Every structure is written in C-alpha cells, then in structure tokens.
Image 1 (cartoon, rainbow, N blue to C red):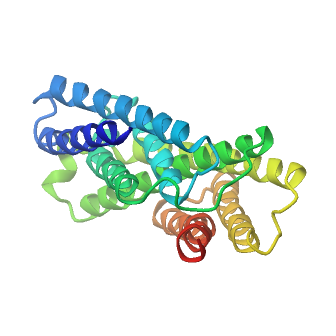
Image 2 (image 1 turned 180 degrees about the vertical axis):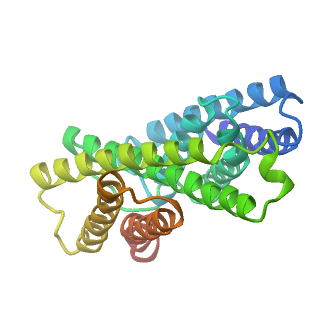
Image 3 (image 1 turned 90 degrees about the vertical axis):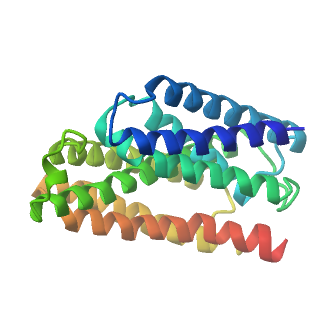
Length: 263
C-alpha cells in the first residue's frame, strides 16, 4: 500500500542529491528544482512512514523502520537550513542515506521483528531516542565536514578560499550546538526509560542499555569539556565519532540481533 510512496521518495531523494551535487559548483543552478524535489522526497517519506505504521498497527517498529524515521528527521533538519553552505555541502550524502533507508523498507517486510507493546511512556522514550539519534548523527556529519574544511585550510587549497566552502567557525559552532542539543535529548530519553520502564536491564535489553549509557557519558563528556576547557577541533570530532559508534552499537546492534538474527 505504501510501496509507491516509498518509490517516489527514493527517486526524489536520488534526483535531488544529484542536483545538489551539481549546485556545489554553482549555488544558483537549478535551485528551484532542488527545492521541489526535496519537498516531494520529505512529504512522500513521512507519508510512507504513516502507511507503515497504519499497516502494522504500531506494534512493529523494527530496525529498518527506525532507521527510516531517523533519516527523515535528519533530512528534515538539514533541509530547513536552506541554502546555508555548510548544510548544502553534506545534503547529498544525507539524502543518499535517506534513500538507502527507504530501500531497506522495500526489501524487508514491515512484519519482521518482534512485536512491541506501545504504551504512551514507551512511545515518548522511543521518540526522544530517535530524535536524539538523528540530531547526534547530524552533528557527526558536521564533525566530518569540520575535518574536511580544516584539512583544506592546512593544505592552503584553492577550495578553502572558495565561496562555496563554508567558514570553519560557523561549522564548528553549529557542530557543538547540535552536539549539545542531541546530548540533552538523549539524556531525557534515558531518564524517561530509567523512571518508567522496567525492562531496561532485562536480558534482551542489557546490551542496548549499557552501550547507550556509555554513549551518553561520552557525548556528555565532550560537551562539558568543550564549555569548561574549550575542547574543540579534531579531538572533539574524533571523540564524537567514538561516541556515535557506541550509540550505533547500542541501538542498532541490539535491534539487528533481536529483529533479524533471533526473529
């Protein structure tokens, strides 16, 4: 039922990514086409998710559906930044990731995975966790971009002085802003889970909980040391990549085992 919407969204994302890649050389080129395709991709993306939820009656939110939710939030947050150079530079990669996540929805039936009992508290916990994952993933994208621009500046490349390359300071400021916001949302998700959910340390959830706590401590440490001691640059980005790896292992690792291997 939702398959045509998924197909349209994938096509719109891919076409938009190609156009945006071409626009990196000329920001004013095909600007309107890129905007229209981006809006089509986002609208059909969320419509497809609604179709999935309707078909599964909200009792199956497997690994691939979760990934598709995260990539929608990621794409939306990046798109609303408009033509900001730092956002345009990473948008093709984000749209490509969104298209890939939608492909998995086509290939893997929505029924795959264990059913869940969707209480309001669990829905709040899951929503906060997915939003935090999207924001922190976006921060990681900006971190990688920070390394790239910093490398261009050190090599004194001609690209570094191009108007198409965003200023290093603006990238870094937004990177830490996203990192701080994502860490706060992740903390809220963990607090809701610890207070209201009883199975966080159950056998099937222990791996996820431990790695999520480690990721939260890592992200929180980066943010605290940044504001307290001025941590920045490559070390901050490398630590963010490590923290993101812990978060991926905690959430997607446990979901892959539960939804794919065991199920």
